[in-house]
Length: 95
Image (cartoon, rainbow, N blue to C red; front, side):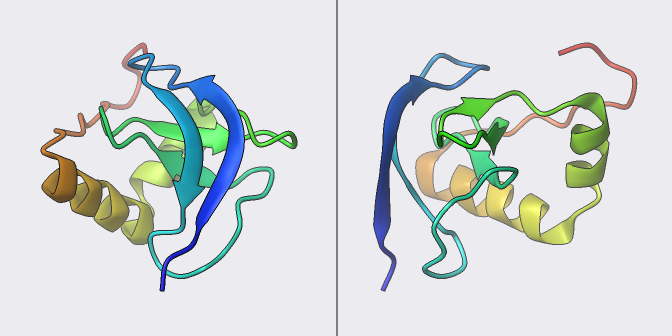
C-alpha cells in the first residue's frame, strides 16, 4: 500500500503546479531533507528542504540524478501514468 504524506502547499519550481502531498514511488518512505521528488505535471525533479517544501536541484545534483537508474525509472513511470513528458537536460544547458 502506498501512503500519501501531506506537505506544506508549494509550487513546482519548473511548471508552477501546486502540490500539497507526496508518495514514495517504491514503498512507504516519508520524505526527508535531500530526497528527490518528481512533479507529476511536468516530470521535473525537485529536492525536499528540511521543512518539506521543494527547491530546484543544484547542477551537481542534476548530474547525479541523471545517472541514477531509480530516478530515471521513476520519471518514466510518472510520465507513463500522467502523460507528462520529462525532458532530458543536457550537461551544461541552463535551466
